[in-house]
Image (cartoon, helix red, strand yellow):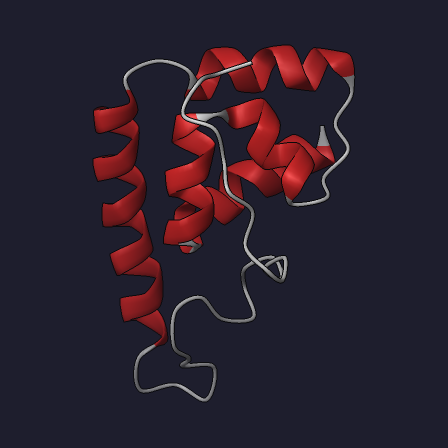
Length: 99
């Protein structure tokens, strides 16, 4: 369950990850190097495979609040910063079709 929580958290703080996750959760999770259990993959497909517009706007709002709370502190950083996963280099190209 820890990696699924990491997926959810990273969706809140990295817009590139979130965009890809909402297009194709399984491929994105794999491309970013996360290894989930079969149960977690099934949960991720259900959680991120529907109502993408609602998820995008909610995660984006949370991202703004989280980064906003860091402004003016020693932990302030540009997006995405150390609270997000390291991005693969190069960024993966995610298929627009869910697996």
